Length: 96
Image (cartoon, rainbow, N blue to C red; front, side, top):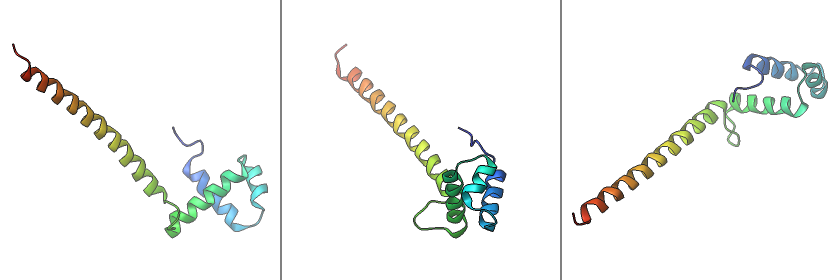
């Protein structure tokens, strides 16, 4: 599912919020997004820049999602191979 706002928009929104010229709530309203959305973007930007130990960076989140997808695929392939091995084992045991 694609992000509803492009990364450039998010980055600019975070920069404007960090300037502190306007309260976050007012800035979010002007940009047409929710206050919590803007605060989440700010927290994620902080984690990306500072490498926070408690929050994953965007690159780590992407890598984690990719690894989970690969893990699901490997588990499915493993299950298929187990069933195939059981099928062929039965075939060799039964008399002809």
